[in-house]
Length: 150
Image (tube, one colour):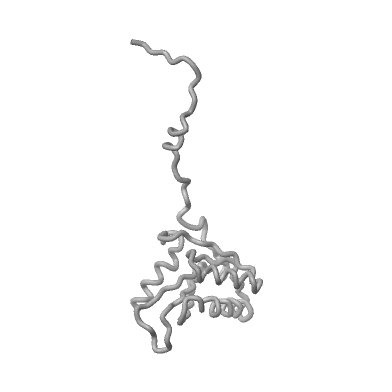
């Protein structure tokens, strides 16, 4: 029994939807920077306990090229912008290191920091990583548990 199909073959919309898939997303940056201060990773962690000074949050910043780590202890999450902007200015004025990129997760305090950096005209480009992807922000994610244990 030989069947021959006559007529015009058209693509079925449902078949096209069924064959769709999500575009590949790169796991991390293509190449690491070698210039100190070019890119900095930032993350915030909370603690179960309050410190003697009343701080409950810990902001950690790591330089991508040198892996130099900077810690700031905060009483509130939104205090990050008040502590980090003067720190970035001090790096620029004292040591001549201008931060060009900041890579962080997509949370409210980081958005507030970006708004303040735009307002102060610091010229920093923010790169946000997806939630639950330590591959994209691995430098900081690997450092946090190590520092917490110490």
